[in-house]
Image 1 (cartoon, one colour):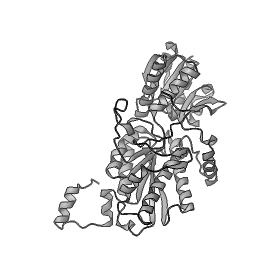
Image 2 (cartoon, helix red, strand yellow):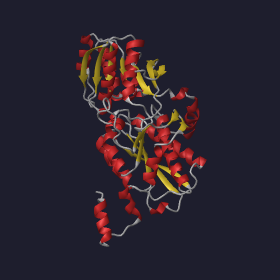
Image 3 (tube, rainbow, N blue to C red):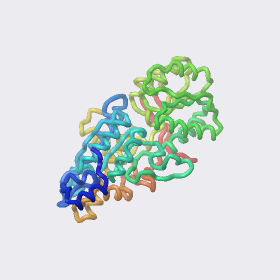
Image 4 (cartoon, rainbow, N blue to C red):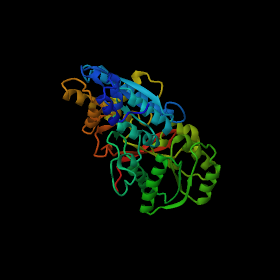
Length: 410
């Protein structure tokens, strides 16, 4: 449904042609008059790929956000308010994500959204949420332009004030990987491949820039179709290039087969990628020769964080069928950030949700700070996570094993 402009609504009111109802607040992006008496239900939306190739990560996001809501309700964190989750499947497609964003905006009880997984999907959702003053907190988006604008390398400008994230960006992740590959792994010649999508191409670009700066040589580049499964031609190019390592900007459904086919072509060299490949499904797709492949991921290993012990225990006790995957801790913290923002708004309004709750929650998010599953959670002036830690993982004995944690020093 198209939103009526403010001018049109004002004119209609003046003419006596329009009667306001509780659902009228859906177009304005506010909670609605039914919230003035306090209490009630607050819905937190979750947008992620719940089906398809990336569903392992998406379902981990959904379940972890659900766990945050369960714990908030159990603790009665916001007196008189019951939190609920509504999950929508974006199938990792920008068009579906935009439709989901419009649906969340149309539902007056939705006061915040966790997600999405993919930066390309986030691009299609940001303006929809921002226009409605509906706060969005992603646990996984790493594209720098989402928070710092398309010209972020020269001048940082925040495009949308309703967008936040608990994951650090590729402006840090790509160079962090380059430093590890060049300085620690001692690889000087790289073949760079990406899937042409926002996340993959951006990550490959920041890796390449840092690798060259360090003195490394890019001996070949290639773009692949993310829907393809046969990478034999690319694998042959890698073998003939003399590369000592392959850097792949993209996600595990393609990274796994790509790694396998590169090694089958005779190039027994490691494939390195970002957080998009760090899922156990990668090993299933890459096969036994994946040993030695590397991935960077945001933050420190959840299992090793003292702050995450309760989350891990609670997740197991909740009986979810799927693993929390790479972004579980960040999804929990994203949902909890929304809950904390709602609490701030309710506390400041005498224990009640105000009629402009969406606007107030979005404003409150900027000042949210708490000790979360992934460590200290807070946001800088761009809506980016202040926690900039990253970890390098290596495939050993069929599992991702952390080999180095730290921050990018550039």
